[in-house]
Length: 279
Image (cartoon, rainbow, N blue to C red; front, side, top):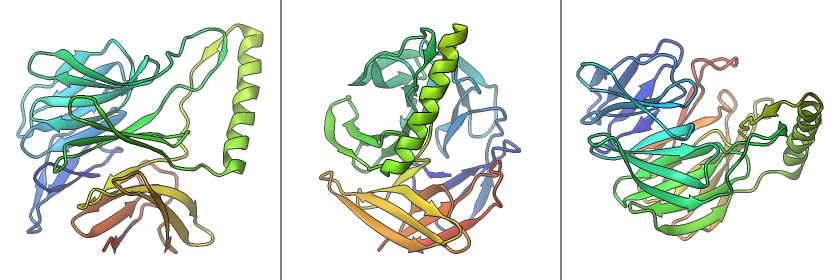
């Protein structure tokens, strides 16, 4: 789910490929259908952009129907979002930068942002980056959150760093994942294989109307509790717990004054939606 530049709420059913959007007045519309994608963003004026299942292609579908366009990417990507009419941001998994901004009209790379260490494919196992993306249209800010490390960087539209913060990952969770990665590395080295898995501790985040970023943090279904980490526009952090007895879901979207927590249609857990006010 997401919110487009006009404030419409959209949703993509990953199982069926169907998209729909809802206006502030409550009108429901059907959008394009895209199946087999790994990430999607929809705008009710500009259309639908998606990544192919492997992240090797950027896909575009007009909002009112028409042929699908595919743009091969030089760097395999993890996530995608609109940043303007005809302009899209993607997050490479292995490159020496965090973000690429592409023009759909010229099919050219226009901006790269965020220095990173390039990830090679030598024998062994090393984590590829999984950088989540959301764009704040009112403030023209692109937020990027690495889903395992919690490294949050917010850029302006030309790639300048606005601020940086770190959303904490519990030590126990981090230790368990790193132990698993070490075992994978040893096994891969023993056979000469190369592995670049991506891991998600953080599954989603959302911009609210004041520019705060709400990150879905620790969740407990048995305890019926979800703790969001709110990142203020100056980079300061605040933990905000909610009782989520029936929906300790990993994904969230902010629409107006509402924070909507939900699960994917492809999740093994029962589908759920829970909404609450952010103010």
